[in-house]
Image (tube, rainbow, N blue to C red):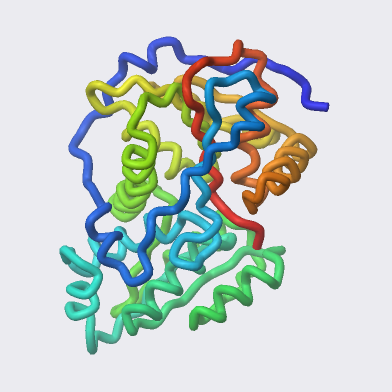
Length: 309
């Protein structure tokens, strides 16, 4: 049974405005072969169970026939790094005949997305993976045509191995930032804005709360920047496993941690409603079940970031 617990809250987040200009990747993504907005699914049974006005799930279990949202960030970063171009066809023409290799480290979906893009653009890809990654996601990356390097190292070290491997003709597209390597991760964050722009169209009425898995932080950053634009009042709740409580920044309204058991139970519940969520995506429902805050009459959107791999 889910144990109720308080959120870690930031009362000033609602009045904070995200600084800087905001890139829109939506039109570029719409130009990609096979583009379709992923569904925003209303689940009345969850609204009744949790006492909210309505509960919706943004289901990223099938994005360009890949089981996660990651291709949005990777594609926009590749476009900015190699172009930029207005459309995917224009980008393909720009790189045609160039001997380029897209390089990254991954624990699954980002590397597969980059390999997919490389294949679509007629480029090579090289993907470094950490120790212990199951064979299924590794094979899925290979199936996209990538050269997979099993580093036998922890994830952070695999990222470093990918970075130091880059030579002439290699283009590093990494979703982790470090000093001196901030631009590409910034483009990846901007690419994820398409997900939230789609929600704006699919649910034009006011949304009270959006629940986002933290992960490496890029999707959460994109959500905060989207919902902290002038005139927006949607709250953002971050969710993370109890073993890695997230840092709370200026624009984040609240954060909560959930256990693996709570996530598995939430995953099973989503599956009964025909939403094929993976563990990371199901954590958003687990978070909503775990919070001891009062139910709201407003709409709540849960971001299901992945399908079952």
